[in-house]
Length: 62
Image (cartoon, rainbow, N blue to C red; front, side, top):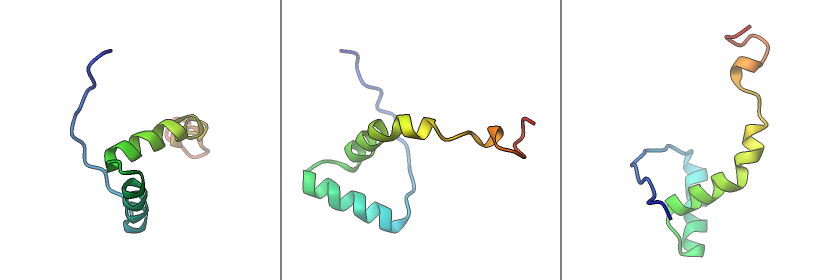
């Protein structure tokens, strides 16, 4: 198995969302990083369905 790339990155969440993530991480005895990574894996396909800003009317690439 390839070694994971562990670059440090700062992310900013609204306070209430962060509290919810922290609560769920504590419930599952997991780190915040683990929670966000799993959430991305679950949501990735749905997020890719959202059109880019450039694809919307009035976007930069018209």
